[in-house]
Structures are given as C-alpha cells and as structure tokens.
Length: 194
Image (spheres, rainbow, N blue to C red):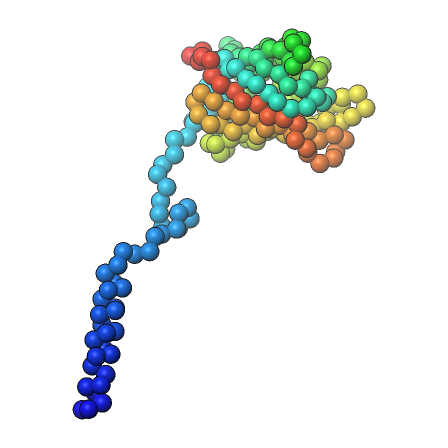
C-alpha cells in the first residue's frame, strides 16, 4: 500500500499531461498531396474555339531557320467554311522590319488534337501535331523540315493561362540533335470572332 501511494502523484501528473496534450489543436496538415484539398481551379475547355479571334503577342528569342528573332504583332484565327481555322500573323521584328506568316489549324475533338500548317516568314513550311488532352496546355512537335543543309524540328508548349491569355515556349532541334530553347511568346486576346 505504501508503494502505491508513492506512485499516485506520478499517475496524476501523467493523466494531467495526457489531457493537456489531447486538448491542444491537431498539428497542421500538409498542403498538396496531404489531407487538405485544394479548391477547384477553373480550366479552359479544350476546343479550337479558344483560338478564334485576334491576339496581340510579343515573342522573345533568337534567330534561327524558323524565327526572325524578337518580334511583336497580331495573330488572328478565323473560322473557314470547312471548319478549319485560317491564321495570319503580322507585325514587326526588332529593328522595325515587317513580317507576315500564314497557315491553318484543324481540330480533332475526339482525339483532342490540333494540327497546324504554318508558312513562316523565313520561307519554311512547318507542320505540327499538338496534343491537348490536358486542359492546362498543348504539347506540339513539328515534322522534320529541311532548311538549307540542316534538318529542323520544333517543339512547342502552349500554356493555357486564361480565356484571354496563353504562353508559348519554343524549342528547336537541328540535325537530330537535342532540343534547345529557342524563345517564348505571350499572347493576349484583343477580341473574339464569335
């Protein structure tokens, strides 16, 4: 009995400590993959209607067989009677010279793909296939094309930021070499031709 009386204060202290710890707020939960759920994020529906209209743009990058270097202008997508889109880019390069590029785009809603044919100001015709299965962006890569003695491929990532804005990151591969950063562009909607 004497020994039990010696442990009573210790048992009371342990009980009080346990009650105090249990009464405290739970530890913060990890953000992201933990238990806390992120609020829903608005996403742009995947359709070529997104592009229809006029966009102002600035493109920063280096000269190459597919690019005349830094430039700014307007890119317009117009719906054709066939359902495809016509595109036309007009603007000025650094130094003030004017440039024009034209092309077309065809959307496949079932596969969520878009195919571009572009006639660039450098004289090349670039054919690219893009995958828009992710609502946040389009990954596109061109077929190889000859530019003088070089074989060129272009890879682009279209980051869909909002209904009024997207970015393009462009990379180039020369003669089968690794892709290297070519430049990037920012596009802002001027109007929608709906």
